[in-house]
Image 1 (cartoon, rainbow, N blue to C red):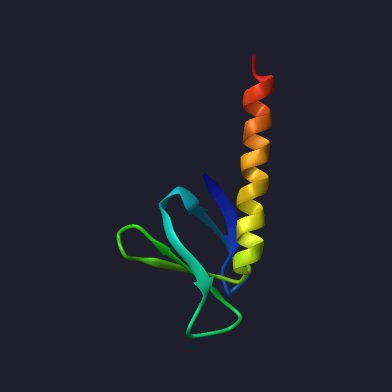
Image 2 (tube, rainbow, N blue to C red; image 1 turned 30 degrees about the vertical axis):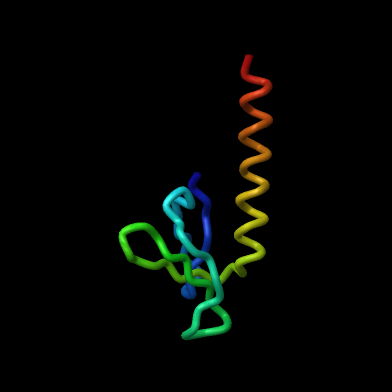
Length: 71
């Protein structure tokens, strides 16, 4: 699932969380969250790990509701 996050320049970053392996506060800056992706690359965003997990849960609920009402 894709979610919209923000980099430290307040630009939108769309991240496919199906490819995320780890989400944690960055060792480089307490103000950034590091998302480690399959393939070894990383994405740095300003949202906290808790905020990201909440966004994922909300999107999962939304998608589940859509699939129930689609038929």
